[in-house]
Image (cartoon, rainbow, N blue to C red; front, top):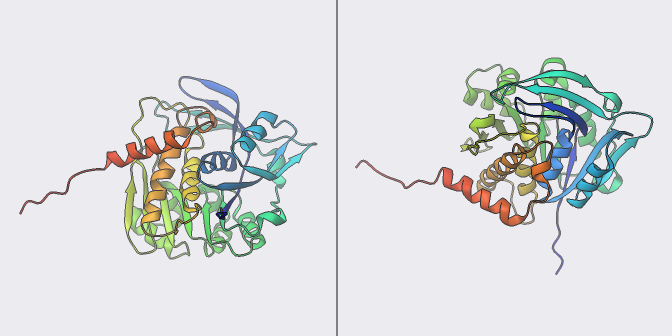
Length: 313
């Protein structure tokens, strides 16, 4: 009997980064939200990528995505343009960074158009692009079972109405704690999550970098996923997108019901993929993994919070 494997569509940026850290530098580092998401999710589900690149985008990166099983038929190549490029420098703590250069190039006029085969996909992740474009993509889908979305401070500031409009169609919103406070107007993170859920998203995931991530689910429950303590963080770029890839990738697996305990498991798989991501530049550490390696790290995460129940009475 053939088992139907649901498809997961991701729409976002595909980029070439120039990364500077306190210990190393890589001038040509393939990145972008859709790239990291797709590479991370590819181990867990059937991924379809929608994005745009220019003539300078390396062939090896497309080959790597294909080798990971990612359907790149939605990746547009503009031969008379250049790929979105970003240059950033990380500070000593590897949490803070300074943007040195941003060149949108072909990404500036990106108008996502989903191939017909993509539109019936059961799962959709709207990575960090303009909220208006996110709404346009959602309108092209037929009846997605689960919709995830990521955003950033810029869109909260300059496209707040558009963002709130698309949030009404979202099942899971992922954002960091600073963005959560800005969007909600609440400093307390619990109050912020409650205010954001009132905007539409049934579940809110607040990413906290080296402190892990918090899930505020549709039932009002809270779950805390730890981050893996690492001695050497090479490049944090793409960690949040890799987290989203692991999270959504697990939920898109055959037989997984996207709610309750499955959301908590998805949080751990998200953390697992993010932990691999930061161990190398670009998607270096996300490439060539196998199920046993991923599962071993999943068990490591499980042991971080494994404790015996006790009572003082």
